[in-house]
Length: 146
Image 1 (cartoon, rainbow, N blue to C red):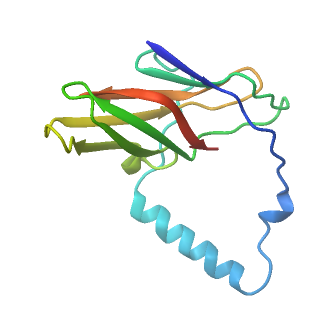
Image 2 (image 1 turned 90 degrees about the horizontal axis):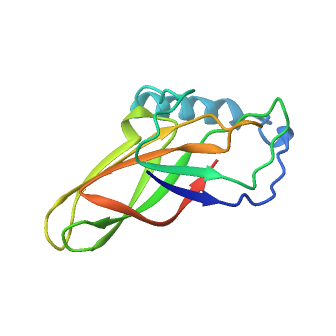
C-alpha cells in the first residue's frame, strides 16, 4: 500500500456564504437537486477503511473536535503500467457514478481504471480516502477539493 500525504492550506469557512439570498437562491437549489439525481446515489463513506490501494491523507490538517469533512473531487494522474503514458482522472467523493472512472490509454490502448473510496475527515482521522487503480499506477500528488 502506498501513502500520499498532502499538507492542507489554511482556509476559512463562512456559513453566511452558504445561505441563499434573493430570488435566485431557490432556483439554484433546484438545479443542484437535479444534478444530484443525474449523478446517482451518494458514495458511502468508510468508517473502517480496508488498507489497500493508495492512501490519501492530509497530515497537517487540524480540525476542531466537532468538525468533519470529505472529498468532493479528487484529481489523480495515472501512469499506464505497459507504456508509462500519463492520463488525468477526476473522481468524486460525493456521487457513486463518478467515484470510479475507466479509460483507454491513448498510446497502447490498455484499460486504465481508478476508484475512490472516501473516508470521513475529523479531528482524529487524517485519511481522506483510498484510490484503487488497475492497469495504471497513481503518480505524483493528487489535487483535491474538500
